[in-house]
Length: 84
Figure 1 (spheres, rainbow, N blue to C red):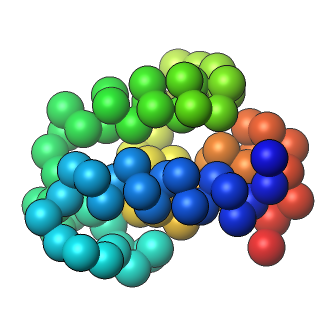
Figure 2 (figure 1 turned 30 degrees about the vertical axis):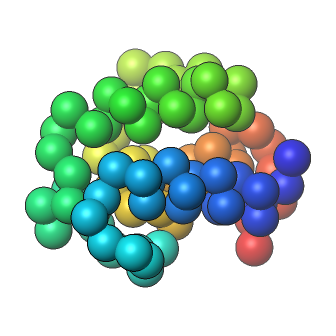
């Protein structure tokens, strides 16, 4: 697994849950109202299932989940992948 695969899978997952064709990686999907707070749990489950990363209580910070790029950076840290 590499950062490009993480980005592609994450973009696809988020894209399936919002009503826009394309999302800039830095857009705060919660602040813009694209998704609601319940979607945060879906993101946690997605990260654990798709990437096998364990999301600890201390990881449950909106900064880790607020955008596609933030989520990809979080997953990369959890998996020990090199950042871009």
